Each structure stands twice: as C-alpha cells, then as structure tokens.
Length: 356
Image (cartoon, rainbow, N blue to C red; front, side):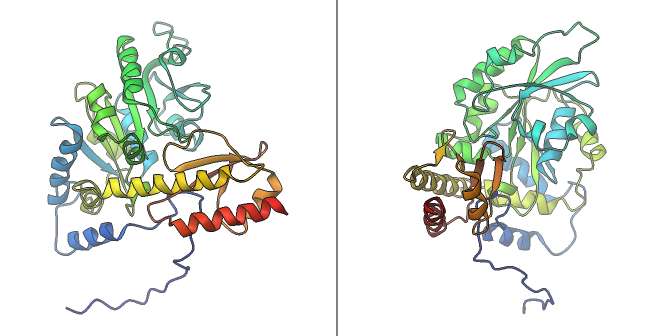
C-alpha cells in the first residue's frame, strides 16, 4: 500500500536544537511507529481499548501487581487529578517552594483543584522530614487548611535527585503523621537512569501512594499518566479525570506511546542519553572561567550563573531560558535527541561570548 499523500509542509529546520526544554524535542521514531501501529480500524473510546488494557500489564511490570494506570493529556493534568484523588476539599499539600506544582502550573492546584499548597524553602529543591514539619501541623485547627499530602518531584525542579532511602524516610514520616505521598515523576526516567535502579525502587517499594508518570519529556508525542499505587488511599479517580478534562476519547494513542517507551528499554535509553549529554555539557561549562554551575548535575539539567549580557547574546544562537533573571541564573536542558555535536557547539559559543 502506498503511503497517503499529504499537503503538510515542514516549517522548521529539523537540524536546529537548543537547550531550553526537553519538551522542545520531537517524538522518538519508535513512538511514532507505535502510533502508526495503533491507528486504523475502530477501538472502543475512553479507555476501553485493547492498548490501554495492555498498558496495565506493562505498568504492573514496573510498579507492582497492584498498580493501575490512568492516562491523561499532560503533566499539570496528571498532578491535578492525582492530588484531588488524595485530598479533601479542606485539604492541603506540602511541597518545596520550587516545586513545579507551585511555580509552573499557573495556579492550577489552587484554581482548578481547590487545593492549598503549603510551601517550604529548600536549598536544593528537596524536602526532608524536618522541612516537612515546618508545615505539618494544625490538623484540628479549622482556620488552617489541613495538611493531607506531601508532594515530591523526582527529579526535582532544580535537577537534583532523592535517593530511595531519602524518599523512604519521607514516606515513613508522612504516613506516621497521617499524610499520603505523591510523587511528580515528569522526569522519573532520568532519575531512574541516573540512580541506576528500577522506577519501583523509589516509588511503590518505599511506600509512595500515587505517581504522576511523565512521557512527553522522555520521547512521547503527548500524554502522561497517573499511576495509583495505594488503592486504599485513592478515591474517585475515574470521575476526577473526567471532571478535570483529562479523559481522552481516543485513549489508545496515549496508551500505545507508554507501551512503546516502557515495554522494553526505550524509556531508559532515552533518559540515559539525555543524562549523558547533560554531564558532557557540565564538563564543558566547568572549563569556562566566570561560569558557575549552581546545583549538582544529576539528571538532564544544568543550572548555571553567568553575566546577563552573555546569556542574552548566547540566546540568539541557542534557545534557553533564564531561571532567575535578576541573579543571572539560567537552565540548560538536554533531551533524548541532543547530540555530542550540539553540546560541543554550545560550549564553543559560550566560550566565545564570555571572551567578548
């Protein structure tokens, strides 16, 4: 059968890559191939398709026999649905001040989910039992939102990682106080690749109750998933997903992407490569006088501080974002399709702009 003709035209240079976000990368070819396999014919809508059913087996292979996946459209949607399912209307979520749910989701936890966020400043984006205790109080005080959930990000918004033992300690502390634990795993593949452990090692194995599983940053075209690990703690997931406008009618096209990533090792290959490129970038940057790396480079992000005017000139050559413009802090992200040549060219450009 001949491929269908199309009037679509390419409007960009596919050789152009930057360091702004792993969301800038396209979909991995193996994911696109899986979408083509799932296309054609009719499948039952709203998650009753064969691909979503098979995804449950794949997810259990990673997160245990009791795990259940609920595919959604995007990361904010995953976090909103997950947090609503483990909080009451009067509930609150403790998180790091730098957490994505606090600084990068447009107020969605508060405005859409109606959840109060109780934030804690952290030096490296990571919570500890002691830091959690700064907000873990007042359960009987009707004048204060009730702390019910601790939300972690793995890896954190600052690119740092929790060890499995650190998450275990947080989970035991939170559970001891009657709270549940949510893990924002938008880049969970990068964390597992860096720690060189299965994803279950720092999720269900240490008692995490519910997980937002990232796909887009790891090579998917679109789609994330909520993974229920503790069914006793989670309520009304199916209804909340619909209510939050995260129920895909053609869900097979979300589910098959996760199957392509997770059924074998594509998720791990993609994450390892992105992490390796970040390490290469960090090594090159460390050799540039006047540029400071701000946090340990543990996944696929490099945070740095350099003169503001240098960053502005460099942005004209490679796309990236300021993290704290007043301080001169920037973030450089690597993706599954970042090449060694991309990194080396960026380091050369950085040296040139620093020397001007």
